[in-house]
Image (cartoon, rainbow over all chains, first blue to last red; front, side):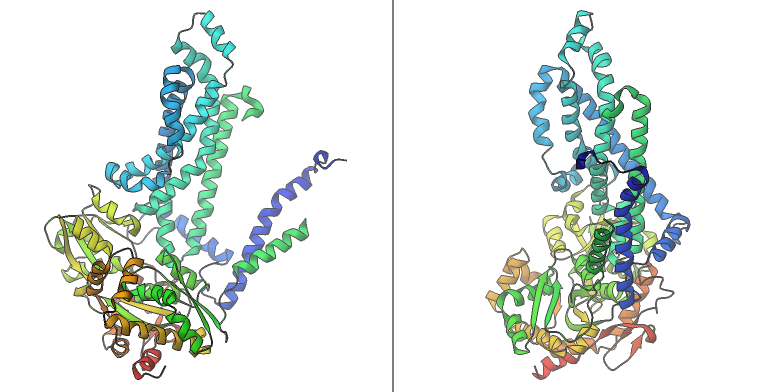
Length: 270
Length: 351
């Protein structure tokens, strides 16, 4: 039988899926034990037990100074910035993308600009962002927006252009105005694409969020990671990394479910 | 499949877990980062002075520049380097607090104005009350701020908090409208003061002389097994100090350019740095009577901020040893040693 036709059974498939995770955990445990044997106070690769204890402490114990649980404060602050940034980007890219896709004047005017803009590395512009938007919450949200909007806009405008021209012509023969075509023909077909564009951009959005928090902040997941890096507290950093991974995974999963529920006709296209 | 998994896991584990083992060896690596008092390390590498001294003792010393200061100390602590340029405070919190027994081989200088608290507008340090302060949290800047506030009977809780700000973005941050005060180090201090007429230096490290020491620290075990490593570093360092003291323009210009300024700019920074050109002066600093008190202050600060080692129960958690054998902190857990032996050899011309 050809290799491309050989499909693993369910238990074998599950095992194959678990293997890379097991390999990484094994490698970590072995590396950690070698280092801890040489120096019991080694901070680089703390033992899994240490990480678990640290995690339990971070999730439950309040800070001496402020009386708050720092991890939850960091989480709420970061998620707020992330949702604001991604939400604004989604709205912007949806409106601009639809305009580019449907209106020839907008297409001529904006396509080149958006294409060039999406190539600009936003992190290099940080000093300008600081002076224009300050060092507070706004500049962090703006960094995410600048970082992911052009890319999402390009994707969505392309999706609108992919709508078969017959559909647009048909709607016109039935008397639909430009506005109605946008609302009733294009929008329903673009919305599921918007969700998949958001899912694809979330990775970059996290990256920009953490970069912004590393530069200037007093709360946030990225802030804490870069702060404790100053004394190589890898147990705290690894807890935060696992937590961020989990959050990102859950957000992605929720978006996928929303998409499946709201746009069942998209089927395997999601 | 299982085999490859185990194999790759083993390779990964081997790559992750190879801390520098103390043993006799001939190849050494030290890391440094850009700072006025550490620029000589870069020059030692480029000029061949280091190679000359290493050859004399039959070893090789690779001097590597790391762009990120904290990362260079972390890499040293993880065992990738045998030595690193660091301040006394960061040595205590990162390698010593992390259980890596570390020796201050060379005391290069102390900050004598290179670190400063800068206020936007007129005022004194007491005017920081109720204002947010931008700085690299947990760094010597943070320590300087604590000492400054202490000097007028204030504490960090009297401020509207501190905002962790990357040193790379400090100059841009100062220009942001809501930033009212920053604490940072040179060359950023001179850049901010010279390009902003409203910037006011309200407290600097010349008011706490001898407290922010810039060191070359090495792994204690490696040094004990390889005294030639210490001799080569000290020999090369003090040969160059002699050239700097004599004001050799070529040497100073090379260092100035490497630090991104010109000869005048570098000289201005050196003026705010108390360089120990003379090894005897460095020995005197290591043996200074107030050094234990300074280190106890630093340990207290680190403990107060919760960064003195994993689960440190008190500010005495890490022991610090001084020339002559006195110890502050826990004498059963000495992880940071000031050792004047090699600087003394340089002073005696015994290298």
